[in-house]
Length: 301
Ligand code: GDP
Image (tube, rainbow, N blue to C red):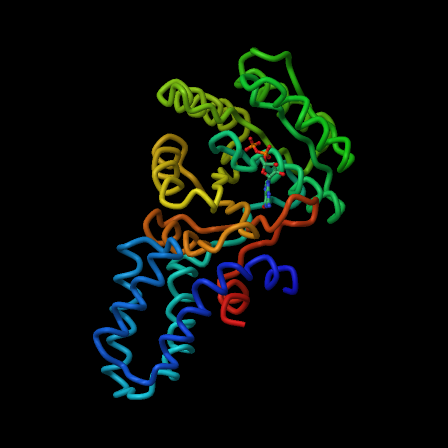
């Protein structure tokens, strides 16, 4: 949790620090609600989600006849936890004990996909699981080698073909290899070029299909990796990928480098896909399982 607190300190300052000064002014009025809206939107919570949050706050104030704005802070934190938790509670990873679980990673170049795969490989490796990586980004120069560097660092093997080869064939081979070696977890990288979106989405659909054909119920997770510093752009990307691959979770990277971590709320609410992991740095163990309570706690101090 210490890591969580320090990693989220910028967002905490911009969001909760700013709220504190509004609540400290001593009066609940229209101006206060408007300032709260500005703060939330400024932290990338998104317009719709912001309006919903402030609306809920107004209802609480009315229902409990609250006069003192300092009472609003715990209410705010409750509302955020509820929003982040969502309806389904299915925020954990769908990992099958005693059989191979396939996790597919999608996302635009540069968001931190390779790094996240490396971190997760480390995470599961540490739990004593046998992990294998599939180098499914055969398009970007250097992508395969970059994954191999992570493989070496963590101590797990990478299944690869040559640059330019068919990613679906890489996945097929990787699944065969994983099964032959009795692996528990197969983490699959994919391309993230956006020059030709239609082409990329077709490629991802095919990769998804091939994995599903080899193992029933696979991929067990399809995680979209999102750079939290890119703000509302991230929302656009998320929608695009969700349409193509039916996402089961989101990884929000670079939360340590942004004051706009409110994007977690926007994504959770508007996409209705749970955030499952948070990236808080560039090192192997800078990845935290997402937990709504912990997250909001870290923000509110
Ligand atoms: P990819 O193109 O999506 O595979 O992105 P990379 O994994 O190569 O990451 C791009 C850059 O972002 C690298 O310099 C990473 O070290 C950095 N990065 C990835 N995740 C995080 C994170 O959670 N925090 C910070 N500060 N940097 C990150």
